[in-house]
Image (cartoon, rainbow, N blue to C red; front, side):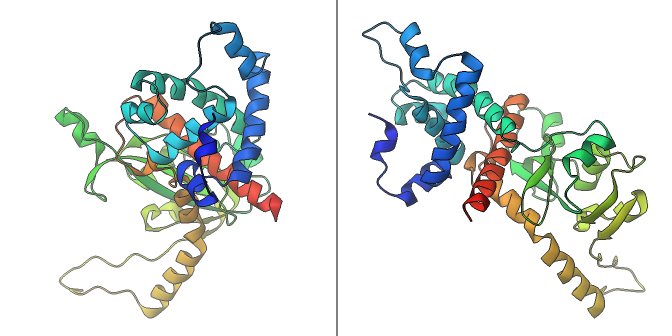
Length: 312
């Protein structure tokens, strides 16, 4: 019996997967098609060839595999707890997740829902964002377990969050679609430094774009070429001549305007983080797996967004 049979209502479905049933069903169709493209047979045929007649797979149908992947991304259990829920060992749960996550990533890639993770050339960037005049850029941080060595702790410590984190960069538009997502950097890095590493200022990345930024990117307007930029005003430093620095009313109003325009990227980041595997303190050590989990979460958000828009 499929695990999904035990779900009694839509609220429970969203709580366990992050998707409603209609979006899950659409993704399952694409996931099933991609499995057959990659393997030349469907999942059930594959199981019939590798299992003895008296043996049963822990996940008997591909619907269960997709549910399993989304369940773990939504709930972020330790492997042994995940195995308990799905009646398998922790090692088997880990193997299922790492084996089929790349297939989910490939499914989203084929549907053009995965964000770019890097741009090698300005032309690649312009092609990926050719129909977008306005882009919103923001940094995000995800908590992680403290490393065992002092040097690694120093690298991971975020002065902003006052804890150990992974940090990355997100680029979206007013529709909240994520076009670009950097790989993780150690928490000691800051948003603007990452932007300059990923998009070197000497190249004209943003010459045809209107860019919206927060105060973490002060200096952008001096270093980059752009069509237009919206960035807030930073409060002046405290000094003897100005012991109680304040923004003017005009500057405060401008900051509100910028905040209203920028809010959509916060929604994009929040859309990724409905999957608690990004929100909880990460226990994972393998950087490649963490970056894959991050990218797939963004792809799942984009897929849900496009599906909703198509449904009207």
